[in-house]
Image (cartoon, rainbow, N blue to C red; front, side):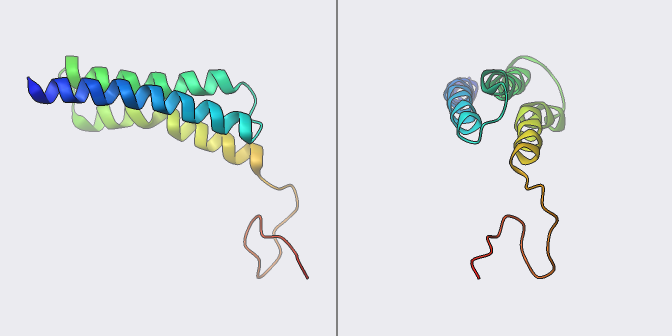
Length: 99
């Protein structure tokens, strides 16, 4: 019972933190629809916490559900911030040419 209460409190705090952090990052790197992405990340995490608390499902399903929004946002962020120039031999992506 105490563990479930701690998980619920952590889930609530983490959901709010994920929403705020994702919204801040999405507006910072100019991802389209930052409010939608923040809601998706926080919502899937909250569903994952809810599955842990109220359903009898395998832990892998809980983890996959909780991480789905973060993974999708990570892909969208990568696509938004990628450089259109082809990579040059001997350089890392997004490395500036200061020569």
